[in-house]
Each structure stands twice: as structure tokens, then as C-alpha cells.
Amino acid sequence: MENIKENLDFIIPMMEGIAGQFGENCEVVLHDHSQGLESSIIAIINGHVTGRKKGDPSSNLGLEVLRGTDVNGDRHNYFTQTRDGKTLRSTSVYFRNSSNKVIGALCINLDISDILQAEKMLNKMAGRPDSAPARPEDVNEVFVKDVNELLDYLIAECTTLISVPVNNMTRQDKLDAIKFFDDKGVFLIKKSGEKICEFLNISKYTLYAYLGEIRGDTPPGEGENSGG
Image (cartoon, rainbow, N blue to C red; front, side, top):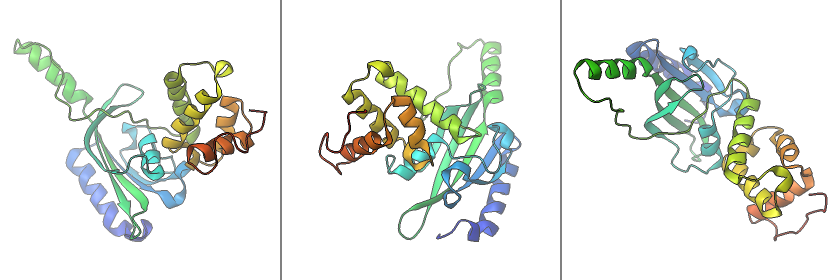
């Protein structure tokens, strides 16, 4: 497959079939990464499940796949939770062209919150101990309506990971933070560098110097200015 839009006659009926099979609690999403990560959703059915619509951005998992941090990409039957507390059983399949470059994705998000609640009630009625369902995999995926929400989420995640206030961060702490953002695919988002510079209180010059060092493009410290 070389182009997502050229295959819509095949993909859209498949999406409608999946949504029809599993009902209104099943969200089916088509991403076209040629549209840009900031507005990659070109088709969505039952968007109320995650509150998204056509024109909304990719999730954090999509960024990692495009960055190459997640080399396998496809994920089947994993569990995640929305910000409003819904439990989703999800599958994400990525489309690649003849050069093995990711060009889009088809994602299925089934809201199983009611099923889990019913299971809990039935266990009580049957006198069985309350137990959580067996889960093949729990994945931290965040669904957002605006790419700035995704950046804010990843900045908060980085803050927790580094565990040092920005004002007290050493050079190595900032390198670790930038590596985290790079691995998460943050710099694939347009103008994300400005927000990361503001967060870390560094100049764009320093950001690119640190990125070059992390990626092995420049020796440690080379090209860095004292403005940090």
C-alpha cells in the first residue's frame, strides 16, 4: 500500500463492518500520516468512545512507531484507559509502503467498561471473590483532541520520570529529558521544539546540540552555548 486515500474504497467498508459487528461501543479510527501528526485522523466511527473526531491527532503510541522507538508497531488485544475512566480493549495495525515506512494506521477501541461492571456484579451474585479480568497487556495510551494536550501529557510524564525540578536539573538531567522526548517521537510534531525549550529553559541552539549528541551526530558538548 503506497497511499491511504487511494485505498479508502477498501478500508472504509472494513471499518464499517468492524463497527457494525461490535456495536456503538466500538470505535474504529483511520490515521493517514501524510496529513501530518497534528491532524492524522481522516475517518472515525463511534468517536464518542474516546471523544475524538476527524482532524484530531495521533496518540502517543503512534508517535513512537513513527519515530522508530517501537519497531514492531502493531499491537493486538491490549488494554488502556481513557481520561474519563473507560476501559478499552484495543488493537492498532500500521500500514507501510513498499519502503517499509509507516504511512497510516487502523485502530480499534472497544469500550468494555459495562462488561467489566457486569462481570463484577455476576461474581457477587454467584458468591465468587471479586477479581480483575485476565489482561494480555496494559498499555499507557493517551487519546487527545489537540496535539498540545499530547505534548502536555508527555511533559508531565517526563517530569515524573526525571523527578527533578527544572530549575535544579543538571546538564545530564536535561539530556535525559530530551532523550525521553526523542524516543517518544515528540520532535515529529511541528513546533514541539519551542515548547520543549520553554519547559527545559534552554535555547533552540542548545536543544539541537543536545539532540545531535544523543543521536550521535555531534561529540558531547560540541556546539553548545552557555545559555543552556
